[in-house]
Image 1 (cartoon, rainbow, N blue to C red):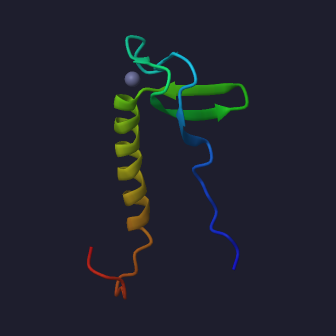
Image 2 (tube, helix red, strand yellow):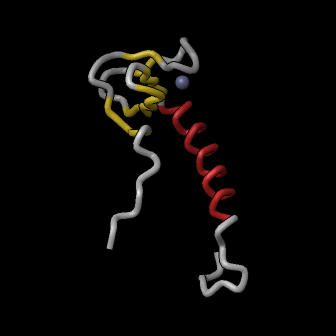
Length: 82
Ligand SMILES: [Zn+2]
């Protein structure tokens, strides 16, 4: 069986190796050792977000994914109730 395609390759969670700034708000500081969300928009473009913003971004993505998934739910589903 072929592996299921991962469409979220450009998004990853990393641990900051040094002090970084949050891309969304300059006042947000990511300290060394803190978890951060890294989004790669292109080969030269990498954006890092602090935990607060990462949470908001992932929540929004979650909603988007649920919305997408809703298009593929079988109408007379054999699935389990949500
Ligand atoms: Zn932030």
